[in-house]
Image (cartoon, rainbow, N blue to C red; front, top):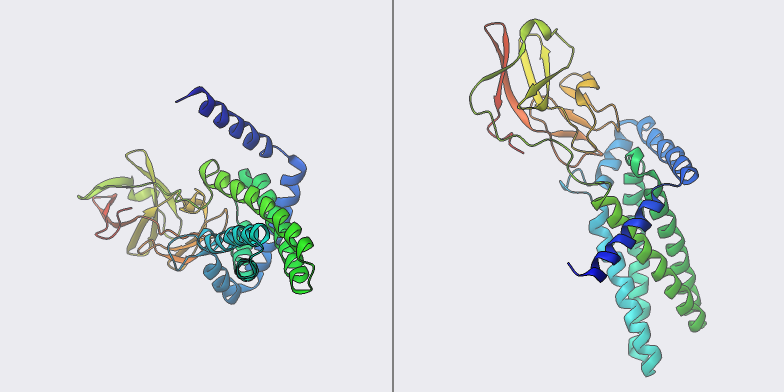
Length: 304
């Protein structure tokens, strides 16, 4: 690695670290996040189903970064055509620039909604950059709306000024989005991976698994949630795929367990997702009681 590249990385890291430590921003962000999340939970199943769509639970992948590609792509191409139109006095390029800017602004609405859904359940350690990311995007969207208004009203130069400023803000916000993923691991799968066991393996004394109370067992140093419901025994990975929460400390309602951190709900029978914000299922195990021991083996479709 060359010295200049190393220096740039060091500067980027320093900027990221400085943005991670703004207590006032973090506190305000957490309050806003918790308020939105509480409103979703109060809304019951209908609200949670809408939130699941916005999180991307149905997609198996966060939806927000998928939509941002459309928005940022349209705005960036729009800026390029704006420049061509201004430098070359090209009416066609101006029209294309206007339309691309409008497409980006229209697509920013569902993009913002998915971002708000994710913002309502971000991990506490990412509060500052997540809040700044949302604020920059919100201001940028507002500036793009002003730009479209001025373009349509014949004030093109001012419209270009607003869109140029907006592109700078949203580009900075996009960098923060990458910072959230690569440093803070927001939107990635936090569950532990298991490649076995293929054979029945004891993980807990049956006497230590009372009926109706989740327990945490260990398998090769990894955590497994074990739950007994009468004669049935269930086992899934105990580390929540959304942000690493301890599922064995969550509430169980019927065959479902709810993460105590951000309230993702998983099916104990197969690890599938009942409700987000999680977008990845939990590893599932077959489980039984034999010779006073709780035994598990990786389910046929349980590897992750």
